[in-house]
Image 1 (cartoon, rainbow, N blue to C red):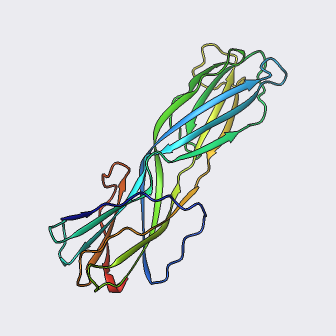
Image 2: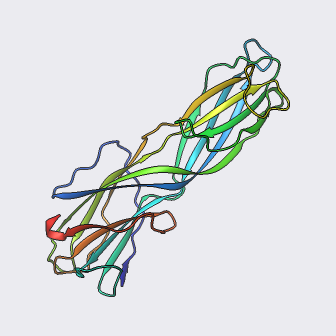
Image 3: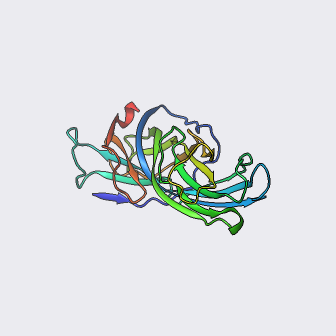
Length: 255
């Protein structure tokens, strides 16, 4: 097996997909990637009526997504052999951060409330238990959480000079669309809080909107398998473990 080393390239910032000069084949796969969110919360006007002003700052780090290009001349390919070529490329590098800054509407619980925070997926499913940030006038503690973030990857693969030596040039264009991440702030005067009651104030905030995208344009050096090879693509997590089976695209000159 020949493994080609591929340097990480920065993800494109625009929301549109990069155009390619040749014909291409699109593949789409949904999976979950590891994510880490850090939240810093501050509050002012704790004893005022109708309640404190709250500011939320933080960031979400992605576990990373890679694409693997496989070139083979084996019609019945089931695994990488000595004559096959693979090239891995970072689509979203591990640790890439998305930041947020939110100022939800003023609370409605006076008298220096206790403040809790709970992570959710913006669709009504909680991703954590309520975490106590602290009491308003005493300052609020930062919090960090790990969770699985739903991700949809769309990848457009094009190739040319299929029969030339040392092999074809392959280009990847596409985007990752991320699942939503939200937070719920709970303001309560109940020192023995276990769940939101009628006298508490619950404020929902969207931290990362559903469908936020990361676009990419990559040209991994994937030559080395001449004779118009069959091309496969496979998605991997940030540590290089597959998140799905290889997807057969077809012969190079048919893409």
